[in-house]
Image (cartoon, rainbow, N blue to C red; front, side, top):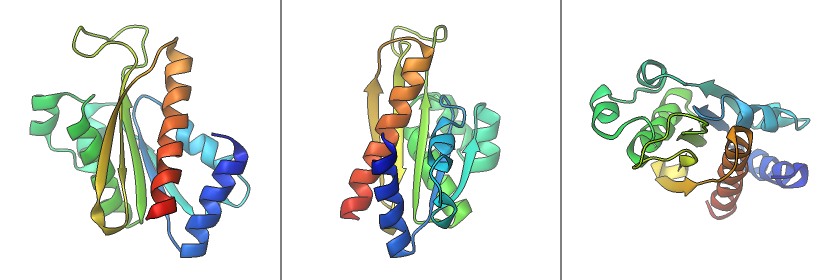
Length: 160
């Protein structure tokens, strides 16, 4: 996502008096970094949380251990719980959560490298999750995740 699109996102949020927070696993803070590269983001961006381990997902976002055990950290259910949990804890209007396998290791036949789940929680408590399968190396998977997460947020904020 380019700076102009991010500035447009920020303007929409700021005009509505709405706030954003992000929960990141496989991107390790890249979403928050891209947002905070924008001057004035402090008027609409509340926080970013890197929850790389399952323990962090449970402790900081309230993701139930049973959900992690049943579906694994890289799942729509966990991404959705991350987004909803952060929205409740941060008391913000919008959240984005990402979890995935950036590689080069860690993939399985069911969840190959490049498997990513992105979830958006918005005004009214709606949560939507999307499965992605990105190609390329670790850096490419992570950057594609950032781009898709922010583009999906912009789409949702535009109609929300």
